Length: 265
Image 1 (cartoon, rainbow, N blue to C red):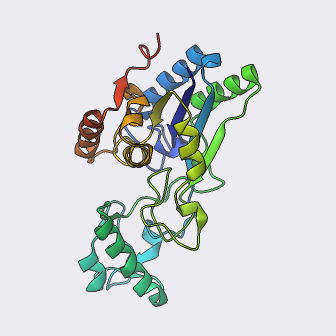
Image 2 (cartoon, rainbow, N blue to C red; image 1 turned 90 degrees about the vertical axis):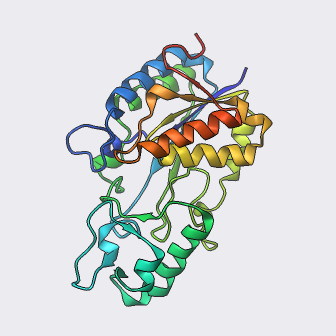
């Protein structure tokens, strides 16, 4: 049996420890359980993929990008709709970006993705928040050393013009930027696995979007190879219903779930 793990954004800024920019309650305990699972399975794991949310300060989903009529940026967690941009309730800080920003929120709407949400700047390149949570980083290193293997790190989110919740593709792919388009290599690798264990943060956003996109591209029969390790992933506060709906939808499609202590025992 070929076993692969896909760990989505297990980064400090999503932990519930002091200093985290976007803490997810329960994420630190999730990380402990995930590390224990990695150590227990060790040599049985053929490949590990770790996605890393990767941003810079100037980003369409960060406060610095937008201004209201008084010249003030939006507070974190503000949602910006198509109507907000059309009526210039919120405008890009640089007027030259008005049409592109409008095209973007319209594309989000038409794609059936989330309304544009303004997040606290997080997972900024070169900062502590971008790093993998230490307990998980330690387990990954032990796996590499024991098997003389390398973790496959997959960065996402660096393009400032689109959100990139899913590790498979951006919410609105940029035709000029291959990093925002379908990650064919990752999809093909997962296709060859017999079991793909899924974990990471946050259940309501990046995990949900990644798993849904993978399921869409793998096809109906292959969804059964996906196993979400349910006690190693938690939702962003206020978005718990999105996480519940994701679990309901994917279970109906054939995805399985397991607890870390029980998986492959």
